[in-house]
Length: 195
Image (tube, rainbow, N blue to C red; front, side):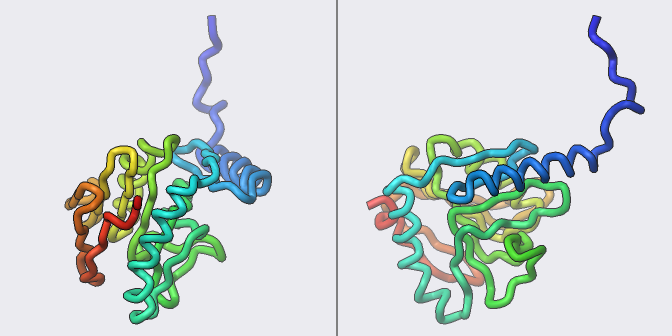
């Protein structure tokens, strides 16, 4: 008969979180050229981006750069979103931040400081990019979350974050225009993203 764990024997939540953070940092050090994240309490190491993945980000950047430059905003990658203490750690494919965003540390920008978070779906990230990350980003206050999915041939823009997730979603088939709302007022030509 298996031993029943007495509550007094269970590790405190903070100890479990500290262990997860330790393993996460070790994994980041072990895979410096990979995208390492904590998603729902599991450490995920993503494959290197494909050429199509990189092209989608480049094509989006080409459309965003004149607009962001004019406003002093910065499109960046390899910066993590701080969702809160003892929360997941996400490293989006692209995010746009204001001139001087509030930072948790050198690598983590506060979620609500972002202006746009973008994920390009990879074979191993479909559920995380479409479900898990948007749920947690909404709770943390990320104002706009864009998913570019070449496998389903769609672009989904999620907005109006809250405790129950994003309240609005606008989805287009790749090739159709996608309007980014205030403070953007910019239309993305999604046909260029996966060309």
